[in-house]
Amino acid sequence: MTAKKILITGKNGQLGCELQNLCPDEFEMVAMARKELDISNSSAVLKAVEQAQPDIIINAAAYTAVDRAEQEREAAFSVNARGAENIALACKQVGARFIHVSTDFVFDGKKSSPYIVSDKRNPLGVYGASKAEAEAVVQKILPESVIVRTAWVYSAHGNNFANTMLRLMAERDELAVVADQVGTPTWTGTIAEVLFALARKEQAQGIYHCTDLGVASWYDFAVAIYEEGKSNGLLPANKELAIKAITTQDYPTPAQRPSYSVLDKSRLLNDLDVDLRNWRESLRQVFSSKAQKLKAY
Ligand SMILES: NC(=O)c1ccc[n+]([C@@H]2O[C@H](COP(=O)([O-])OP(=O)(O)OC[C@H]3O[C@@H](n4cnc5c(N)ncnc54)[C@H](OP(=O)(O)O)[C@@H]3O)[C@@H](O)[C@H]2O)c1
Image (cartoon, rainbow, N blue to C red; front, side, top):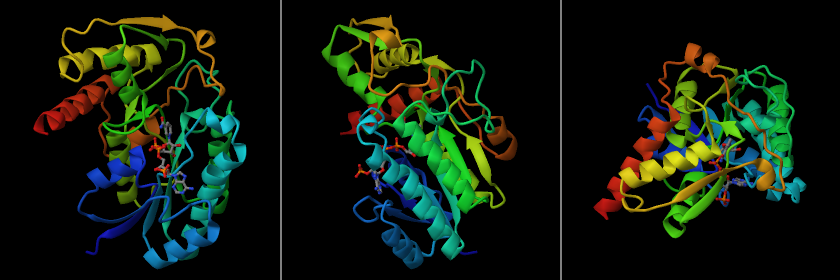
């Protein structure tokens, strides 16, 4: 049997890198960075897709600067909405399946129980609005596409909350972290595993929610980073740090964020043969392998 060919956009992003790290042998992967394929350029997308003739495209490219997007609406929409639209059109043209990655920020956070896949989109900021428009456009062009919403993404490397916290924790004696926004920290490895399972399952279509299991505030996540960082040697074992819980009001940001964005994973768990881990377990695993790699250098 010939290997299914997957084209990945945004190969240098957190998720793009993890997809390359964890790609099973059964797939042939073509991964493209922004400079090789700018997804906001419709003719470039069509050309690249016609050339590569993939069976599946996973769109891991996005404009992810949530706060900057408030000032750069056009840039956010051009990558997130138009980019996804360009890929959907190209998939339709060559008969490829499309797996698009989306976000919990399509919701307003007003619920107090996990968001189900059919809950109404009502984004609070420009980034969320650009991702919400992408979902609507992709579903219109290609109703058989798959949309995977995830949240609070981090990986061992890259620009994310876990790595920023580790750096700040090493430098400071005191930190203040927001405790009234609740969601689920999610390792890129979890998302990659789910995306490959969806690539395998040809009849999968529609929206899936994919995060690690459990619930945390940013404050809880920071405390866990501190504890796991110390126990894995990523922070000095004798490090003393005070972590203060603050409110969103104490830490205003240009973009409003959902105060509650836990995603209900039941559709994913029913349809796919994947095991999700608790977010804390994923964090422990990521920090432990990060520490081992650092020791090996
Ligand atoms: N990060 C989160 O907390 C989070 C939460 C929920 C959902 N998500 C979603 O998860 C997906 C992956 O996010 P991530 O955290 O891996 O993002 P990331 O680390 O910011 O990576 C995004 C990648 O997209 C690339 N890119 C930007 N504009 C592009 C364009 N016009 N054409 C092609 N590539 C372009 C970037 O290229 P450069 O390297 O050149 O900038 C970057 O490599 C995205 O759909 C995001 O919306 C993320």
